[in-house]
Length: 161
Image (cartoon, rainbow, N blue to C red):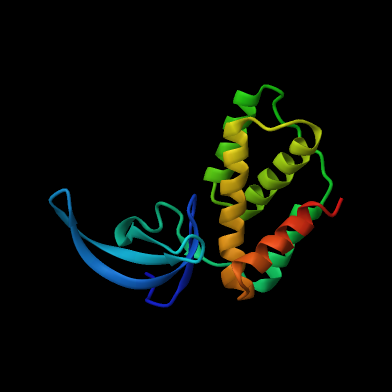
């Protein structure tokens, strides 16, 4: 169980700070929810307390672990991806849904490299943006720096090859 003030990651949405734990009635069912304040887009997200582990809510990484994510973003490593954009999209979506930030970083890196060679499809462009936002939201909380500064750090890491 997490407490108010904890910094956590909600897979597919990114990182946030628990600003409240409230009981709400939704669709006739009363449940407790974590209220997460997300650093990007100034958004609040509700996560059912009872489902937090099931959906993969976890504490944010340490600075050392996040440094490794930056390293992954900057590596030039060929990952065999399907040639067909539809299969590639599903392959990358599965990696994002895993909730593992290392996999999300690999998706960002691969899509950025692919974008250098040819234009991404609209779906892949949206995926790239969403995956970057997931990483950036956690980095903002780990490094305690503004979003704009973290965006610059991420973009520099990806483009360092």
